[in-house]
Image 1 (cartoon, rainbow, N blue to C red):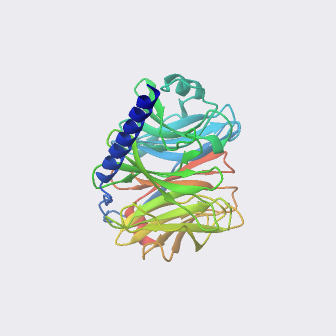
Image 2: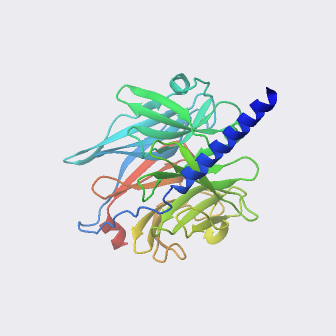
Image 3: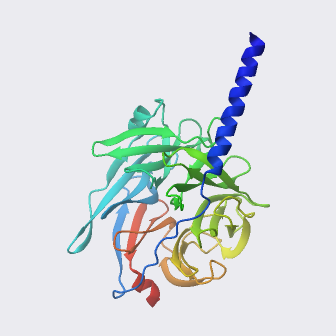
Length: 371
């Protein structure tokens, strides 16, 4: 009986492996390129949000798009990675006078998330979030049930009118499914699925390009590994339907921003190598503008994150020109995120004042072209 059971399990294992390979081959390894936005209005740039936590820290903002509205989310508590940290948000609606911010407040608490997890589990603290663009009301959140960031997991959760409705962990690692985190927006693929940039933070760190199917299940993951460095927090910018560049933070740190390339739609990535862009071990945000141009928000001083700048590359990230200094000598300003909102304007948000507050600016394509 024992022999037959072993044979049965072996056949089952082979069958599941074959199914996984078949599923992998069905993936379309091509990017969906966003439509280029043409500057038609007069240049506009305004700060639309300036928030300071009453106590403690507010850090790592993300942008969630909702038809003609958007949300900015962040994690807030006494200090990063502590047991009183929850996810907060502010909703923006468009009026005749422009974008109006609602009242900031918590939208995902540790207790509520633990209660809706399938299976139910303890959530000790919360971290970086990004929008799950594959699901209405979807969000990916970095969660910790035991230990610190090196033991984090990525939670796939759903928000509805009544608040948090459901959550599960993404299956990203066979080793207890730990030490994966998120930071950058998803990447649209030609088959109408999405890829999730993620990163592994324990030991030999690396970036990951995670392919999800239409149901949000992980069906493949490709590494962005380094050579003598520790790449994390990949920011992926498609350049064509098959080529993309990923900018990565060096967790070592080396004082330089890292870069990796793909020529086959994310199926494989070159070794993450140092660029000539100074960086204080901080993530960047980037946005494709079309015709090989990239807009980037970055800390370009290896000594610290007091300076946050906007820069443009006209040659797919090989060289850069600074067009605006957003913050300088005003305390730590980092963890930027860039996304286009309804109407084509560009929203930039970041944490400032050494993780105590969140700022957001909105500007149009005409302002970018005028710099």
